[in-house]
Length: 579
Image (cartoon, rainbow, N blue to C red; front, top):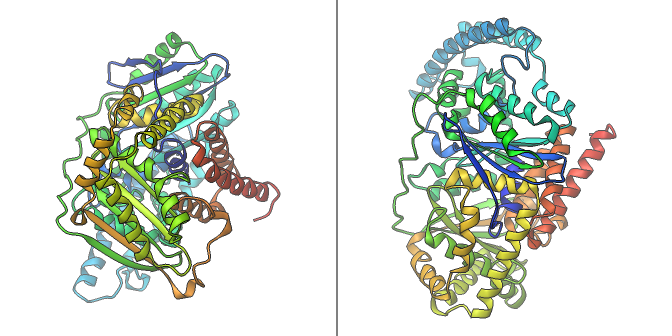
């Protein structure tokens, strides 16, 4: 469930505008390549602490998709000293489980072959399994029970909680995986020891059962949401060759087949110190933190080789692509264009262009919602990922209107930007709002820590100080130029969502009124995930949402309040003993 927190961060905190300025970061690079970023701030007895690996789903390959996200789960399973009653018996048992699984994989391969040639219909149907397979499965179930008996469940979490730490969480994205929490200032050494220990001596307990947990997470967030499966198909359609085309959670067939040996090899390269950055923001002494970093993080060995950058680039799109889906959702349209990655000069121009179009004072709301009355809401945004970028327009049709009418209205607004210069007053308003967002983004220790880590995973943490000037330098001529360069019919992919007849029309949940399409989707996903969450998970996410509230832009506050209310209601249910 941890990944939902990352989605909230990206949507409400680190979205367009959350760019900070003049942050006095102290950087230390250890001999093994690990970078430590420090921003001391007196007064608050807590320290926002975290680290990031520059590894996400784009660093995977077909066959192991979803492995980065699986690691997000595995990194909380403990180490050689945490989470076990008998480490030697534990390791011996894991080896035996791997051996049994290897024999089961051989049986699986035979079942897949038989299905391929038509001898059986479904290789997963238990009735097609051999007697040997059933014996192996029974043996594995027995080993799994013994593993649970050796485990000290959730000990990693409990050590931190007992010490007064809070908000421990993690998240996986296309480009990175990040781990963070708030730790009392007098427990900083504990954080250095705990985090270095799970990097130096991890034990991937419950590996095979955790694959099933991730599979269930995928079912809740993708298969069971109104548009989840179609959104996944849309991504795969848009990205022809880039690894951004597969989902962060992974393809089901890969989740069922990833081995612990593959995970260990992946970990050795991608979780090595030369691929990591740590960050501290709060009340601490940099000299002491540096000494602790050298003592604990400094003992991590460099990886066996340097992680490879993503090699496969997206092919140039030559013709418009369209898909039509019938889902239990309001009629809507998504229009996506290939653009540029994070840090490209045009990325800044496109971000400003997105701000011009979006929000209650933006062009799309004024035109499509208020004047033409063709849409309930409309938005636009630039997504500059590490290796590729895209710009997306979205709109939900009003009752009696069609997604195609919304689509054409979106194009008319784009045409205005292609033909006419944005007035100086309108452009300056957007730049002023960006500056205000920069200031808000600096206020929260937690928010600043996350921003520094996410930036360092892409280009460099220093971009937090240099990017604001690049935003302010955007001109009206720049906006017209990029509008003509990228917003062409052959460069776009369009998804039309029509309401399923069984959905009962296009009435919209009142809870979602006034939210952007992205915010609505996050609320829907949270609603689907909440019944599976434990009280401590809900409490941790709620705490982070409350922290984000101080630094989130004004137009994101409503969405945060909706999320906060849902979390508070669920927490009351759990603490009151209701389900």
